[in-house]
Structures are given as structure tokens and as C-alpha cells.
Length: 435
Image (cartoon, rainbow, N blue to C red; front, top):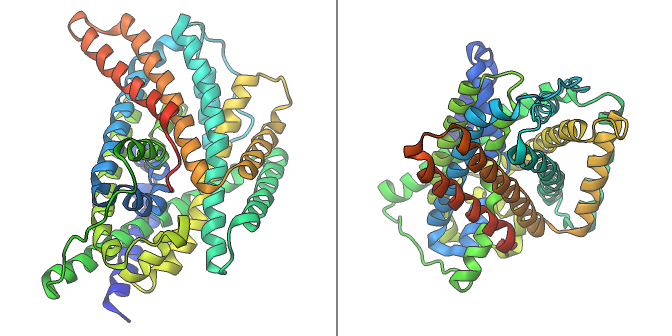
């Protein structure tokens, strides 16, 4: 067995065993509050970010990734502000909700979070509008995750995604919609937890394999060098494409909807931890991929699944492991967002349609989106939709500031939140698909 395979397998087993079987970790409330946003942030980004960034930005890929992460951390600070100061204001005079009808954690959390928004003036109105926008963003992200699943799954059988992929996504969405309508998605929760642990273990194994690959080139072979990789167009066009990739660092906002199980301070602390950990992983991963992509050249023919080809250079066993992990992780991410969207719809619609049909609404919307887009377009659309949600959250934070901020910090925070909101608005308006 090649040493590179051994490094990958041992890392995957150690990290996976710790995450899945270490009882104190599984019983830790802080860990559960951390793993939800961390898994959401890392769920699909590590599959697509490096090939897309190097294809469009060249050797500035790490800088582009850093820019996305800085923007995400700034917006995360806004969400944390709204958790600490906005939620108590927004919850004033709100009517008690009936409680979620599905016991899936994401369904319950999003339904609970959306119900705790009373008549708090303009801030309350914007918060409610943001829930509608987030529900739409989730419909897009469900299609995005399943299009990735189809792409990676069909690649293993040497099939083009195209019509086969759209058909597979449609079948999955019909199945999920039917199960959600009849029984809810609570039964899938345990599978999701296992898949999340395996996904994080696979990410650790991939990074470990990359460290071994780079260390071997630098310390043993003496052949490590940064190859010339040019950007794909003028600066303005490249910036717009990077904007369209915001989805790869999205997911931290899920902490906003964990209030049914975790305190505000715990959500704030663990959300910050999740963002910092994901930032370190992403920067290391994209940086370490430079040697691999530089040596092999940009593989534009591989499309969205290019990481599978690149990983084979790092360790022969990685393509199979990555494919299996991609299929499982994207299904898990899709069902989690499906449940979250259904929870939001339950709170938003307030019985306008039978609650059990919310999952069908999500499935139908995601099916339509799937047939109207390709995987590159869906990345951009998902990024722009979540960016619009962030714009509204920044606006809510500015309005809440008037009630809670001391005079000496009011204007500095207004400027910061306003800048972040305008940046996200720029993503919503100008973001375009990567090529």
C-alpha cells in the first residue's frame, strides 16, 4: 500500500472514530451547537472551491478564498449581534407558536426561530422578510446539493451528468418530498449525524494527504515550486465570479435557528468557533492544492467534479473515498436544508396550506430550479440568494442598534454593518457563475 494511502486511511479512521464514537463529545451541548454550522460551512465547499478558484483566479486563489472567508466572518458577526441583542427585541409581544409538526432538529429550529418574531416595527418586518428569502435560498441550495450529488455519483459510472443528473435529482426530490409529507424527516436525522462525522473525517484525510504530498515534494524530492496559473479574465469579471461563490462559505447562519436547544451565548460562542475552524481548514486546503493543480494543469474538462481527478494525484485511494463521501454528504446537506425550509414555511404560512405539504412545496420548487439551471449557475444563484438574506440581517442589526448600542459604539457599528450589507448586496446584484 502506498504511504500516501496509508496517511489518508489512518487519518480518516482516527478522526472519524473520534467524532462518531467518543461519547463525551456526542453528549456535549457545545459540540452539537458547533457541528451544525461547521458541517454546513464545510458540506460542499471543499468539493468545488479549489478547482473553481484556481481556474478563475490562478495563483491568487488563496487570496480570493481569504476574501470570501473575511466577508463571511463579518456577516457572522452581524448574525451573532442579532442573536445576542436582536432576538430579545424581536421576541417581544410575539404570539406563542404551536410548535413544529416535524421533530427533525432543523425543522424544529427554523420553525421555532421564525415564530419568535413579533411586531417589532421595521426590524420585525425585515426579519420576517428575511425568513421568506431564506426559505427561497434553501430551495435553491437543496437543488445545488443534489446536483453535486448527481455529478459525483454519475462520474463514478463514467456518465455525463446532464439529463441523467437532472433525472436522478428529480427522483431523489420526489422521494424526499413523499417521505417528508407522510412521515417527516426525523428518521433521517441519525443518518445525517453519521454522514456529517464521515464527511469531516474525509476532509481531514484529504488535508492530511495534501500535507504529505507537499512535504514529500519539498523535503524529500526537492521539487516543490509554485507553477504559473493565470486568472481567466479582467479583474472586474473575476471579482464577480468570486462573488458568485459565496455559497462555499455559507452555513454559519444556522446557529441563528438553534435557539430551541441552545442558549444565545452558546450559539454565539460555537458559531464563532465553527467559522474560525472552517477558515483555517479552507485556507490550508486551497493553499496546499496549488502544487497539485500546478503540476497537473487545470482540468476544465472534468467540470464540477475536478477535485476527484486531482485527489488521485495525492493518493490513489482518494477518488473512491471522495466520491462516496460526496454522495453521502450532499444528500445529508440537502435533507437538512429541506427540513429547515419546511420549518420556515410552517411558521410563515401559518396553516394556509396543510403543514404536511410543506415538503412537497420544497421538492417541487427544487425540481423546477434543477431543470432550469446547471450546476455552475446554481452555485451563483445560491450565493446571491443567501447574500440577500445577509443584506436583510445587516439591516435588522442596524435597526436594533438604535435600541441597544451605547452612543460611543453606535456609529462605528452602523458603518461596519452598513459596509457588510452593501458588500452582500453587491454579491446579490453582481455575482455571476464561475466557469
